[in-house]
Image (tube, rainbow, N blue to C red; front, top):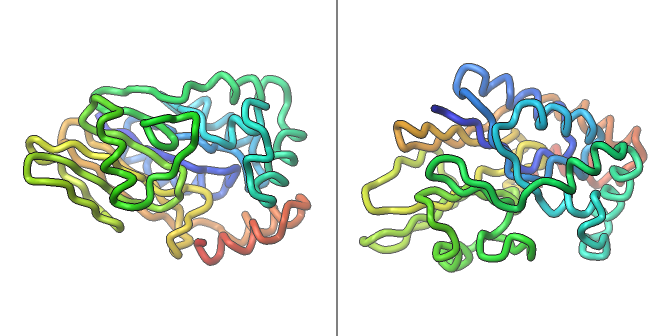
Length: 241
C-alpha cells in the first residue's frame, strides 16, 4: 500500500490538484495532516476534495480557528484575516466537518498529527533537531508524519543515536530506527522553493519519498488578491517563504 501524504493545503486549489495529479500513478490513497484551509482562496473546494479523497485526515490549527475551537487572537494578523474570511465563506456543514476532525490518527505503523505529538492541541512547531528528539516519547509507532512548519525535514532515533536531515528526498527505514517526517506544505511552502511539497509513503518498502510539484502559482495568487485577502499571502507563494 502506498499513500500520498499531504499537509498544509491552505485553500490552494491549484496546488492541491497538481499534487493529486502527480500522485495518481504513485499512490493508492491519500492521508492529510491538517490545515486544509486558511490563506488560500478556495477553502470549500479543498475541503470537499480532501473529504472525498482522504483515507485519514487530522485537524490543524487553521481548522480549529475556522471552526471556533481556537481563538483567532492566537494567529498573526495575516492568518487571522484569512481565518475570518474563510469562516464567512464556508457553510455550516463545512465548519462542522472541520471541527469534528481528530487531532491524532494512526494508519498502519504511522501516527498522523499536524503539530507535535507531545501536545497536539498546543500547536508546537517541530523545526530544530532538539524539537524532534523531544517528541519521540510521545508516539508508539515507527513513523510519525507531521506538518505545521511548512518546511520538510526528517528526524530519526535508534541505537546508533539521533539523526536529523533538513532537506530529505528519500527516507528508507533502517532496522531499529524510528522516524518523524515533516512532508512540507502543498499550498504554502516556506523553504524558498515555491513548488508544492508532499510525500509518498510506501508501507511495504518501508520508504518515504518527498516530492516537489510545479503548479499554476500565478492563478493561485490572482485568486487571493481578487478575494480581498492580504496581498502578502499572494506574494509569498512566488517566493516560497
